[in-house]
Image (cartoon, rainbow, N blue to C red):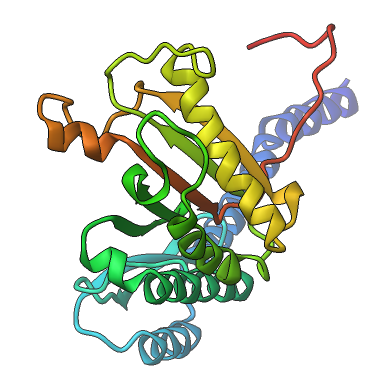
Length: 264
């Protein structure tokens, strides 16, 4: 009986102290967790200072902006970068685009020089935009009233323009415009026919003087795109014009759509 009681007391004593093992394991894991957290949160000051000095030397200016540089996945370091607030950020155009812009500008100057006297008299206007060069010629320089045949005196003017543009590859749209006074003849029943015939006459002269026909398009707008109000004779005279558009934009990409394509 005594041995049995002694064994029972030993087993009871062991079972009461087993929780100490689990508690010790828990404390050890908790300590390891805090050590790892401290190691992650600490910032390497030497790396921070080297990176900060290099960025400041690259952007030398007084104003600053905040940049977050990750030292770890959890805690980023904060670095102040200088920013020039007065100078806006610009995207430099490509070298090919710069060359094309210079060519267009040179072409516009050559046309201005070729048509110098008419420009000074206000009979020709030359403008340049991102879409290209626009040469607006008053119809009185080119045609007789209600006619679409080029006057002999005007052919020399258009030959000067053809001389400038025939060595270039840009597309050209020749537009005919009229005033709002109706016309009805056997040859031109309306201003549509008259404006289109005038544009075609200019295109034909360009082709005869060496401009590639594939670059040319004749358009007739009649009285539908006036540049003045048509209230006075001077306004109507200005609306009677031929506009030569020398396009600077590259052709847009064409995507063929299938019948199964779904619209958004």
